Image 1 (cartoon, helix red, strand yellow):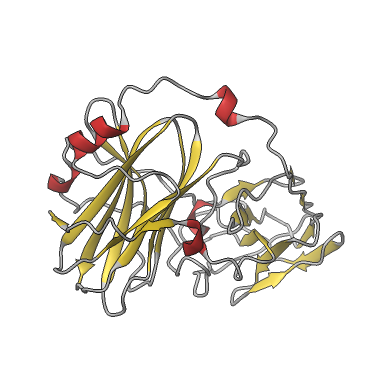
Image 2: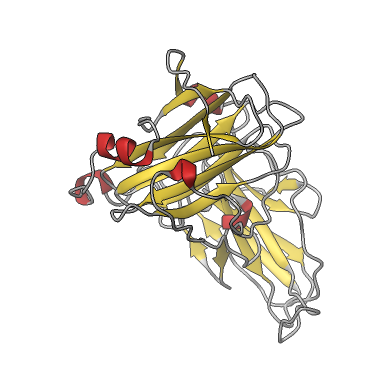
Length: 325
Protein backbone atom coordinates (compact mmCIF):
# COMPACT_ATOMS: atom_id res chain seq x y z
CA UNK A 1 0.00 0.00 0.00
CA UNK A 2 1.20 3.51 -0.64
CA UNK A 3 0.53 6.51 1.56
CA UNK A 4 2.59 9.56 2.43
CA UNK A 5 2.72 11.20 5.82
CA UNK A 6 5.02 12.65 8.40
CA UNK A 7 8.42 11.24 9.02
CA UNK A 8 7.08 9.93 12.30
CA UNK A 9 6.99 6.20 11.73
CA UNK A 10 5.31 3.52 13.73
CA UNK A 11 7.70 2.43 16.44
CA UNK A 12 7.79 -1.23 17.25
CA UNK A 13 7.62 -1.93 20.96
CA UNK A 14 8.62 -5.15 22.61
CA UNK A 15 6.40 -6.72 25.20
CA UNK A 16 8.14 -9.62 26.87
CA UNK A 17 6.42 -12.23 28.98
CA UNK A 18 6.06 -15.97 29.15
CA UNK A 19 3.17 -18.05 27.88
CA UNK A 20 0.41 -18.11 28.30
CA UNK A 21 -0.51 -14.70 26.92
CA UNK A 22 -3.78 -14.53 28.86
CA UNK A 23 -1.74 -14.06 32.05
CA UNK A 24 0.20 -11.15 30.58
CA UNK A 25 -0.52 -7.64 31.94
CA UNK A 26 -1.61 -5.18 29.28
CA UNK A 27 -0.59 -1.91 30.93
CA UNK A 28 2.38 -1.42 28.59
CA UNK A 29 3.12 1.79 26.70
CA UNK A 30 1.48 1.85 23.27
CA UNK A 31 3.49 2.48 20.10
CA UNK A 32 2.96 6.10 19.02
CA UNK A 33 0.78 6.61 15.96
CA UNK A 34 -1.24 9.42 14.43
CA UNK A 35 -3.69 6.96 12.94
CA UNK A 36 -6.84 7.14 15.04
CA UNK A 37 -9.76 6.58 12.68
CA UNK A 38 -11.86 3.62 11.64
CA UNK A 39 -10.34 0.94 9.43
CA UNK A 40 -11.96 1.99 6.17
CA UNK A 41 -11.16 5.68 6.21
CA UNK A 42 -9.06 8.35 7.81
CA UNK A 43 -11.50 11.16 8.36
CA UNK A 44 -10.12 13.02 11.34
CA UNK A 45 -6.45 12.33 10.76
CA UNK A 46 -4.35 14.82 12.61
CA UNK A 47 -2.15 17.22 10.68
CA UNK A 48 0.74 19.27 11.99
CA UNK A 49 1.04 23.02 11.87
CA UNK A 50 3.68 23.72 9.27
CA UNK A 51 6.31 26.37 8.61
CA UNK A 52 7.84 26.91 5.12
CA UNK A 53 9.64 25.42 2.03
CA UNK A 54 10.93 25.86 -1.53
CA UNK A 55 12.47 23.37 -3.96
CA UNK A 56 10.97 21.24 -6.66
CA UNK A 57 10.05 17.70 -5.73
CA UNK A 58 9.24 14.96 -8.19
CA UNK A 59 7.42 11.72 -7.37
CA UNK A 60 6.32 8.97 -9.72
CA UNK A 61 4.48 5.87 -8.60
CA UNK A 62 3.89 3.04 -11.03
CA UNK A 63 2.09 0.06 -9.49
CA UNK A 64 3.37 -3.37 -10.47
CA UNK A 65 1.02 -6.25 -11.12
CA UNK A 66 3.53 -8.95 -10.31
CA UNK A 67 6.02 -9.25 -7.50
CA UNK A 68 9.68 -9.20 -8.53
CA UNK A 69 10.28 -12.31 -6.49
CA UNK A 70 8.35 -15.30 -5.44
CA UNK A 71 8.58 -15.13 -1.67
CA UNK A 72 6.73 -18.37 -1.15
CA UNK A 73 9.34 -20.26 -3.17
CA UNK A 74 12.45 -18.44 -1.96
CA UNK A 75 11.71 -17.87 1.72
CA UNK A 76 10.19 -21.11 2.97
CA UNK A 77 11.81 -21.98 6.28
CA UNK A 78 11.93 -24.84 8.70
CA UNK A 79 9.74 -23.88 11.65
CA UNK A 80 10.69 -24.70 15.22
CA UNK A 81 7.08 -25.10 16.39
CA UNK A 82 3.95 -26.56 14.86
CA UNK A 83 0.55 -24.88 14.99
CA UNK A 84 -0.65 -27.38 17.60
CA UNK A 85 2.41 -26.73 19.78
CA UNK A 86 1.84 -22.98 19.63
CA UNK A 87 -1.83 -23.45 20.53
CA UNK A 88 -0.94 -25.63 23.50
CA UNK A 89 1.82 -23.34 24.80
CA UNK A 90 -0.05 -20.03 24.40
CA UNK A 91 -3.58 -21.17 25.17
CA UNK A 92 -4.70 -19.42 21.98
CA UNK A 93 -6.68 -21.63 19.54
CA UNK A 94 -5.16 -22.05 16.10
CA UNK A 95 -6.92 -19.99 13.42
CA UNK A 96 -5.69 -20.25 9.84
CA UNK A 97 -4.74 -17.09 7.94
CA UNK A 98 -7.76 -16.03 5.90
CA UNK A 99 -10.17 -17.19 8.59
CA UNK A 100 -12.29 -15.47 11.21
CA UNK A 101 -14.23 -16.46 14.29
CA UNK A 102 -17.10 -14.93 16.26
CA UNK A 103 -16.34 -13.75 19.78
CA UNK A 104 -18.61 -12.03 22.33
CA UNK A 105 -17.05 -10.10 25.22
CA UNK A 106 -19.62 -10.43 27.98
CA UNK A 107 -17.63 -8.66 30.69
CA UNK A 108 -15.32 -5.66 30.72
CA UNK A 109 -11.68 -6.75 30.78
CA UNK A 110 -12.38 -10.10 29.13
CA UNK A 111 -10.13 -11.13 26.27
CA UNK A 112 -9.62 -13.72 23.56
CA UNK A 113 -6.68 -14.72 21.40
CA UNK A 114 -5.93 -16.84 18.34
CA UNK A 115 -2.63 -18.17 17.00
CA UNK A 116 -1.14 -19.20 13.68
CA UNK A 117 2.12 -20.28 12.09
CA UNK A 118 3.39 -19.01 8.72
CA UNK A 119 6.22 -20.71 6.83
CA UNK A 120 7.25 -17.74 4.65
CA UNK A 121 7.44 -13.96 4.94
CA UNK A 122 3.83 -12.72 4.88
CA UNK A 123 2.06 -9.42 5.31
CA UNK A 124 -0.47 -10.21 8.03
CA UNK A 125 -3.52 -8.01 8.58
CA UNK A 126 -5.29 -8.60 11.88
CA UNK A 127 -8.92 -7.47 12.07
CA UNK A 128 -11.63 -7.06 14.66
CA UNK A 129 -14.88 -6.05 12.94
CA UNK A 130 -18.43 -5.12 13.94
CA UNK A 131 -17.48 -3.75 17.35
CA UNK A 132 -20.67 -2.63 19.12
CA UNK A 133 -21.23 1.03 19.93
CA UNK A 134 -20.58 2.42 23.41
CA UNK A 135 -17.68 0.01 24.06
CA UNK A 136 -13.94 0.20 23.54
CA UNK A 137 -12.19 -2.96 22.30
CA UNK A 138 -8.46 -3.09 21.52
CA UNK A 139 -6.38 -5.36 19.28
CA UNK A 140 -2.74 -6.50 19.64
CA UNK A 141 -0.50 -8.48 17.28
CA UNK A 142 2.37 -10.47 18.82
CA UNK A 143 5.20 -12.64 17.56
CA UNK A 144 5.50 -15.77 19.69
CA UNK A 145 9.23 -16.35 20.08
CA UNK A 146 10.99 -19.70 20.23
CA UNK A 147 11.86 -19.07 23.90
CA UNK A 148 8.20 -18.70 24.86
CA UNK A 149 8.17 -14.92 25.00
CA UNK A 150 5.82 -12.51 23.22
CA UNK A 151 6.99 -9.50 21.20
CA UNK A 152 4.44 -6.80 20.41
CA UNK A 153 4.58 -6.04 16.67
CA UNK A 154 1.56 -3.75 16.18
CA UNK A 155 -1.54 -2.61 18.02
CA UNK A 156 -4.82 -0.85 17.27
CA UNK A 157 -6.43 1.08 20.12
CA UNK A 158 -8.78 3.56 18.41
CA UNK A 159 -11.30 4.90 20.96
CA UNK A 160 -14.88 3.76 20.36
CA UNK A 161 -14.10 2.51 16.86
CA UNK A 162 -16.31 -0.02 15.08
CA UNK A 163 -13.21 -1.86 13.86
CA UNK A 164 -9.56 -2.35 14.78
CA UNK A 165 -6.72 -3.24 12.40
CA UNK A 166 -3.12 -4.34 12.84
CA UNK A 167 -0.72 -4.72 9.91
CA UNK A 168 2.81 -6.11 9.87
CA UNK A 169 5.27 -7.73 7.50
CA UNK A 170 5.94 -10.95 9.37
CA UNK A 171 8.84 -13.36 8.97
CA UNK A 172 8.22 -17.10 9.09
CA UNK A 173 7.19 -18.09 12.60
CA UNK A 174 4.36 -18.15 15.14
CA UNK A 175 1.99 -15.23 15.79
CA UNK A 176 -0.82 -14.35 18.16
CA UNK A 177 -3.75 -11.95 17.70
CA UNK A 178 -5.07 -10.76 21.07
CA UNK A 179 -8.34 -8.84 21.54
CA UNK A 180 -9.57 -7.27 24.76
CA UNK A 181 -12.69 -5.48 25.97
CA UNK A 182 -10.91 -2.46 27.45
CA UNK A 183 -14.03 -0.49 28.34
CA UNK A 184 -17.56 -1.84 28.44
CA UNK A 185 -18.86 -5.15 27.14
CA UNK A 186 -21.59 -6.57 24.93
CA UNK A 187 -23.21 -9.88 24.13
CA UNK A 188 -23.11 -8.97 20.45
CA UNK A 189 -20.26 -10.87 18.76
CA UNK A 190 -17.37 -9.32 16.88
CA UNK A 191 -15.50 -10.96 14.01
CA UNK A 192 -11.88 -11.64 14.92
CA UNK A 193 -9.50 -12.91 12.26
CA UNK A 194 -6.60 -12.22 9.96
CA UNK A 195 -5.64 -12.09 6.30
CA UNK A 196 -2.29 -12.81 4.67
CA UNK A 197 -0.63 -11.49 1.51
CA UNK A 198 2.61 -12.53 -0.21
CA UNK A 199 2.69 -10.29 -3.28
CA UNK A 200 3.71 -7.15 -1.39
CA UNK A 201 6.29 -4.50 -2.29
CA UNK A 202 9.40 -3.43 -0.40
CA UNK A 203 7.66 -0.53 1.36
CA UNK A 204 5.24 -2.68 3.35
CA UNK A 205 3.89 -2.54 5.89
CA UNK A 206 2.69 1.03 5.32
CA UNK A 207 -1.06 0.42 5.39
CA UNK A 208 -1.85 2.85 8.21
CA UNK A 209 -1.28 6.57 8.59
CA UNK A 210 1.26 6.03 11.35
CA UNK A 211 3.22 3.52 9.23
CA UNK A 212 3.84 5.76 6.23
CA UNK A 213 7.03 5.51 4.20
CA UNK A 214 9.18 8.65 4.28
CA UNK A 215 10.11 9.99 0.82
CA UNK A 216 13.17 11.92 -0.27
CA UNK A 217 13.54 14.73 -2.81
CA UNK A 218 13.46 13.55 -6.45
CA UNK A 219 12.38 10.08 -5.37
CA UNK A 220 10.89 7.71 -7.92
CA UNK A 221 8.80 5.04 -6.20
CA UNK A 222 7.44 1.88 -7.77
CA UNK A 223 4.98 -0.17 -5.76
CA UNK A 224 2.00 -2.46 -6.03
CA UNK A 225 -1.32 -3.04 -4.31
CA UNK A 226 -1.27 -6.54 -2.87
CA UNK A 227 -5.01 -6.82 -2.19
CA UNK A 228 -8.31 -5.14 -3.01
CA UNK A 229 -8.22 -3.05 0.17
CA UNK A 230 -4.53 -2.16 0.13
CA UNK A 231 -3.80 1.41 1.21
CA UNK A 232 -0.21 2.63 0.95
CA UNK A 233 0.84 5.75 2.84
CA UNK A 234 3.83 7.98 2.17
CA UNK A 235 5.05 11.24 3.63
CA UNK A 236 7.40 13.95 2.47
CA UNK A 237 8.93 16.51 4.83
CA UNK A 238 9.40 19.92 3.23
CA UNK A 239 12.98 21.15 3.21
CA UNK A 240 14.41 24.57 4.07
CA UNK A 241 13.78 27.25 1.40
CA UNK A 242 11.39 24.94 -0.47
CA UNK A 243 8.22 26.62 -1.74
CA UNK A 244 7.00 24.25 -4.48
CA UNK A 245 6.18 20.57 -4.50
CA UNK A 246 5.70 18.70 -7.80
CA UNK A 247 4.15 15.24 -7.99
CA UNK A 248 3.54 12.95 -10.94
CA UNK A 249 1.53 9.73 -10.65
CA UNK A 250 1.38 7.11 -13.40
CA UNK A 251 -1.04 4.18 -13.17
CA UNK A 252 -4.03 2.53 -14.81
CA UNK A 253 -7.58 3.64 -14.02
CA UNK A 254 -7.97 1.04 -11.30
CA UNK A 255 -5.57 2.95 -9.05
CA UNK A 256 -5.85 6.34 -7.34
CA UNK A 257 -3.28 8.59 -5.70
CA UNK A 258 -4.41 11.20 -3.20
CA UNK A 259 -2.97 14.08 -1.21
CA UNK A 260 -4.19 15.21 2.21
CA UNK A 261 -5.17 18.90 2.17
CA UNK A 262 -5.68 19.21 5.91
CA UNK A 263 -9.38 18.36 5.81
CA UNK A 264 -9.89 15.63 3.19
CA UNK A 265 -8.14 13.37 0.70
CA UNK A 266 -7.97 14.95 -2.77
CA UNK A 267 -7.29 12.79 -5.82
CA UNK A 268 -4.33 13.70 -8.03
CA UNK A 269 -4.70 13.75 -11.81
CA UNK A 270 -2.88 10.79 -13.39
CA UNK A 271 0.01 11.19 -15.84
CA UNK A 272 0.23 14.89 -15.18
CA UNK A 273 2.64 17.03 -13.16
CA UNK A 274 0.78 18.31 -10.09
CA UNK A 275 2.40 21.35 -8.46
CA UNK A 276 1.62 22.69 -4.98
CA UNK A 277 2.73 25.70 -2.99
CA UNK A 278 4.27 24.65 0.30
CA UNK A 279 5.62 26.43 3.35
CA UNK A 280 9.43 26.56 3.57
CA UNK A 281 10.70 24.81 6.67
CA UNK A 282 13.35 25.96 9.15
CA UNK A 283 16.90 24.81 8.50
CA UNK A 284 16.89 23.10 11.89
CA UNK A 285 13.83 21.41 13.33
CA UNK A 286 12.96 21.71 16.99
CA UNK A 287 9.93 21.47 19.22
CA UNK A 288 8.96 25.00 18.19
CA UNK A 289 9.90 24.76 14.51
CA UNK A 290 8.35 21.72 12.82
CA UNK A 291 8.67 21.34 9.07
CA UNK A 292 5.59 20.88 6.92
CA UNK A 293 4.80 17.27 6.13
CA UNK A 294 2.98 16.30 2.93
CA UNK A 295 0.74 13.23 3.26
CA UNK A 296 -0.13 10.99 0.30
CA UNK A 297 -1.93 7.70 -0.14
CA UNK A 298 -2.29 5.15 -2.92
CA UNK A 299 -5.38 2.96 -3.16
CA UNK A 300 -7.63 0.97 -5.51
CA UNK A 301 -10.52 2.95 -6.99
CA UNK A 302 -12.92 0.23 -5.85
CA UNK A 303 -11.72 0.28 -2.24
CA UNK A 304 -15.01 1.22 -0.60
CA UNK A 305 -17.03 -1.24 -2.73
CA UNK A 306 -15.00 -4.20 -1.57
CA UNK A 307 -16.24 -5.56 1.75
CA UNK A 308 -13.31 -6.63 3.88
CA UNK A 309 -15.34 -9.07 5.96
CA UNK A 310 -16.14 -11.09 2.85
CA UNK A 311 -12.45 -11.99 2.70
CA UNK A 312 -12.62 -13.74 6.05
CA UNK A 313 -13.92 -17.28 6.14
CA UNK A 314 -15.93 -16.88 9.32
CA UNK A 315 -16.63 -20.12 11.14
CA UNK A 316 -20.13 -20.10 12.59
CA UNK A 317 -19.38 -23.33 14.42
CA UNK A 318 -16.38 -21.94 16.26
CA UNK A 319 -17.82 -19.63 18.91
CA UNK A 320 -15.27 -19.86 21.71
CA UNK A 321 -15.91 -18.82 25.26
CA UNK A 322 -14.16 -15.73 26.47
CA UNK A 323 -10.76 -16.08 28.09
CA UNK A 324 -10.30 -13.63 30.94
CA UNK A 325 -7.09 -11.96 31.96
